Length: 586
Image (cartoon, rainbow, N blue to C red; front, side, top):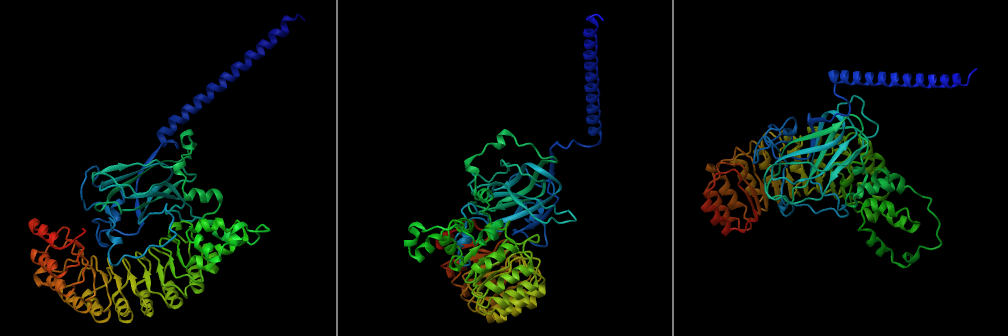
């Protein structure tokens, strides 16, 4: 056989293979094109960005509006924008309860907890649910008046519309920053640079701090952008900015977050060292003083270094005042269980915002208080939606020395459960803002808790007769210094007269949005004469307030520092004279 034939055979085979490969490539390309066309006709590709407005407002800590209205309430954040891009004060927006720093300087101001990490500055929050879980690529916050309050944006792994709740709920910080002063009240679209997360979400949480604002911030809508398929981490995203490394990232890196509190504090096998260096020469009290400046996660880390410091970090004296609110996303039954032995002397405890979505059970909370409640003086439980009647019963039985109880926005507690609070006769401060407390229970509380000095009943819509409540306060609560009756709908001049006659030590009184009070009855002038110690008075949105009322306040209430007569008819020239007579701060 000629040598030419083998060469031809090889060339033929090579040519045949090229043809097959080309045919396969063409077929595959045609199929991909056909699939792309079909997908375009059927549905959007999974990598196309989805834009969503909030479907529902799930939870919030406070709002300016009424529980029976839509004006200035958090519920306005659901759906498309109502106002944006217009600027100004609109009732169709979401407004939180406070702004500025004057809430921290009024007579009812509470002392801050020590050991609060500097990265946590949140004062209020709102949680929004969206239709489709996505991997977030952007969050647009439409702020229509006095922007700049948002300090944190978080995403949750739990789908609020899923029939099967997950075994573990994760919260991831998408963006966080300290409060900043924004020049001007004009509307803006706030779009911070968010980090990528490794789970899809349709539950977004905004946390705000309004301390630098000159007026209430107003939000119109929150737009969530995202994709269905997890995006590949870009080079830009993979580059680390040292300014973005916060305490939460450190906790994840070193495994020392509050979610691993049980593991860190239960370590009993520590490496043996012949000495503890110079710490052996320091007095025990001095080491305790040094450690008192550490946050709880820092105590967790330090406890793993040596036996001496482990002993110091587990000393109950380090937990006299304990705020777990900054770590609300990680606190659960296990955390409370492993804190029990260290909190036997605890006097101040802050569990606000914790325990929701099953993280803390009624039994877990009850077990903790049975061990640690005997010395408790102050208990903060704001927005604790796990609380029920059993929890209130345990609080009143296990905390005989309790003086301050905050149940603000605990709207899941049934009305009849508040009767148990009457058993705590030592109470000096009680906050029931946005709760379902009803009239009979409140009358019982006022009758037996005669030591009350600070009482908040703002937005308590189930009380039928505030005149009767005011009469009971005047008869029983002679030591009352601050009273919040924000948006109580049925108090009249009769109740105000009883209150002013019996509670003459009042320094702070909030009667904002109380439409049944009329200046023509003389209730405001009578109030001014009977309460000369007033430092703060809210008469917000009462259109009957007149110059005579203001003149009497200037003459009788010489200590007045805060006066809110927003949305009331005003004589500008007279108000200028009033500001000269009284040293008002706002």
